[in-house]
Length: 303
Image (cartoon, rainbow, N blue to C red):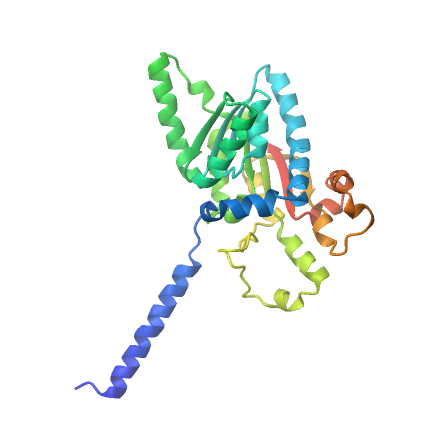
C-alpha cells in the first residue's frame, strides 16, 4: 500500500524530472530566426548611426575587393549572402552588375530585402532562398538541373561562388563551425569569404566602462533572446581564426565595426556629427589595437 509520504516523494521526483527536462529543452540551441521581430530588427540595427557605421565599413572592405576580383576575372562575380537579413550589401553588389544569391531563414526579413531591391531595380540578377542555410545546396542543385534541362546547357561551372558573405550569422547558429564545411564546398578556388561576427570582447569592455560589474560576475547571465539582439553564444576571433587555419584559408583583411561609438555614453564634440563619426570609425577600423575593440569584427579570407 502506498503511503501519503511515498506519494508526495514520487510527485516531487516527477516534478524535478520535468523541470530538468524543460531546462534542457530551453538550453537546446537552434539556429535563430528574426522572423517575428523583423520590424524591430530593422529599426534597432539599421535605424540609426550604428547601422550606418556597419554598412560604411563593410562597403569599403568588400566593394574594393570585389571590383578588383571582377576585373581580374573579366566578368561579373557570383555572390552568395548566407543568413542575409536585410541584405543591403548583397543588393548593392547586384546593382553593380553581379549575380547574387540571397538566403535567410526568415521570410519576413527577405520580404523587406526584396522591397529594397525593387526600389533600386526590379531586374537585378538576384535569386532568393527562404530556408536554413543548410538547405541551400540542395535547392541550388535542383534549380541548376532544371536550368540545364530547359536550356540544354551544362551549368556545373556556375555552381561555385566567387564571394560568400556571412554577416552577423555565426553568433546565431547552433553549430557555427559547421558553416566552414559549407563554404569549402560552395566557394570557387579563387574565391573569398567575408565573415562579420559579434565580438564577445566588446561585451565585456562595454560593461566594464558602464560599471556593470554584477553582470560580468554573473557567469550564468543570459540575454532575453525574445527581446535582445545581444547573442548568448558569440564566437571569439581566435576561434574563427582557428577555423580559417584548419580549412586552409589566408586572412587578407580584418576590420572592427564600431570601435568607439558604442563606448561613448557622453556624446560631445565630434560625436554629434554623424559624418565625422563615420569618418573616424573608418579611419580606426583597421588600426591596431583599436580594431579589436569593435562591437563586430570583419574578416575577409581566401583559400
